Length: 204
Image (tube, rainbow, N blue to C red; front, side, top):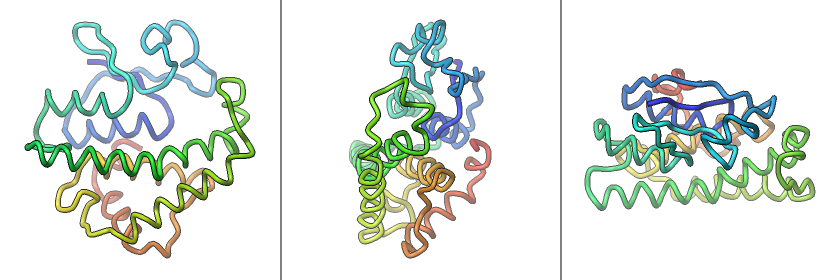
């Protein structure tokens, strides 16, 4: 397999997932700052012009981080990061979807429409006026997670894709003006536990 990767939280999710699995694949760096992801030949790999993308041994290309991680889970089931039963997989997918919608997506667009505007305004529709609201929505999502957090991991007793996804985005947010508020003690403790895992450093 071959992983097309770049800077940013989305590629890091897959790199951290691979590190947790103990799987090493060939990597091809795509220069987002130079817009290489929006040009040939990369558009033949992923017509949406986004990273990451995973090239399989038969030449098929997979995009979208959850689809890539689902595939990797199936071909390398141990250690399980999505689940070993229908219930575990459903719970992981539920929490992955929740943190994505409530925190990751608004955080990412808050960055694209503000600090990242010089890079993104020529590549996608940007709404600078929406940036403050989107950042506030992401913080509301963290507050929601804090209020109901049971731990030690997002899905309960299992470390899963949901943890990897949220960690990568919160770590990114801290670097672009959207830090994790220390008043969210449970989420902050969780973040420290994830950051201590070898996969966090391996994927940075």
